[in-house]
Length: 343
Image (cartoon, rainbow, N blue to C red; front, side):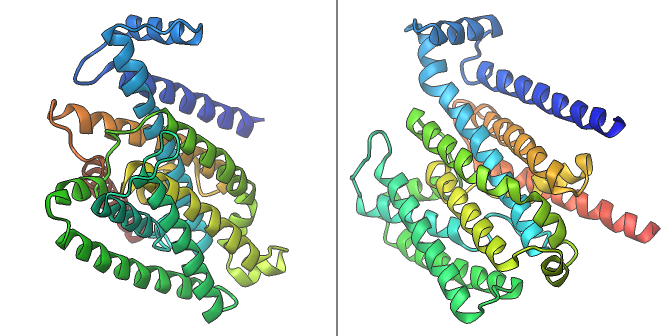
């Protein structure tokens, strides 16, 4: 009963924090909006009478979809990172370990350089090409890993991910060399940006999160058994190869969609799972939901910083996440080193 109350308290605290961060990100920006006016605009929109004044336009057409995209991308990347760390038993793993995120970035760069103009509804050619290249990268890396090692060992997966990432980086550098006046667009996009998101992006991210989240969350008990070693997990009834393939495919697809919308946003999937473990412990049944909440809040606040610190100039959101992530990661590992020394 005490554990249940403690878990309920953590959930309620997480939801309250998310609501507070969400409201803060809606109200603050280059044009601050009072909380009362924000509530009035949202209430009007829900009743079908959206306000068309400048406050309504800023909130409903720009700021609300942007904050929602930040929350969904943060939740998705954090969930993906936690799953990959548990799956590979590697604290440095995250959703980009297989190089699919790099592949998505390459696809977006190709669309920018070639001027790929095919759209689907409100989804731009850049988004569509990023999704396409992410899918091709996923199929290629997993197919090659299976051809080289039918057991899909951790070493093979990590090695292929590193090699593929290096290849994509070389191709991306080659594209940048011949990009001409489009260099700034490619550079800004690859560092992460939510400046151009719309409601179609929100729908895409929400659909991907619900679909692939529903695939990943039920694997929490299996991920706990992975911590004992793959051989022990097999003896305890886990289909190791099937779990790896399903989870890695879902993670890579989820990360590919995130990159197609927000560009290359680093460190979210690496740092937030470590921070969540400090709060809820290592059990993936609690860790995965905590990562969803923590990742959403983290990226919403990072996006707020990116668009307000040097307003009206906007920073790439990947710069903010990398600076904060690097500092937090160093502090976490310094603490771990002290704890090991004391032990």
